[in-house]
Length: 162
Figure (cartoon, rainbow, N blue to C red):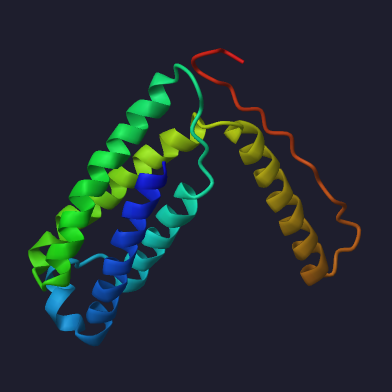
């Protein structure tokens, strides 16, 4: 996992340079990304960073996690090549870059689902965020009678059935 994090850090640094170049010269890349903006790409990169950091690799025979990790590793190699090409100003690599970002997000999603303790963390996080949102809504709209709501989310594991 540490190797993936290091490679992602390198990709992130290169993407930061690409992001700054996109901001300084928007007409050069616009024909290659008609439906995207530099801010969207930057947000996706930050999301990938944030998702990759807390993943804990399970011990033992966990084929789904390892398949997803393998897909992430191969996607990251191709993503590194695409970002280096973008850094050189080869804007024709933007469509491949977008596809690789999607592939990376997909593999990270599977890694999160099958990592150590992720189901409990996800459900706890979602319920706390939801109750915080209700509290903020109650305070902003002037409805103090809106009480704190706790949502229990159960996640069914497709392999173990639990």
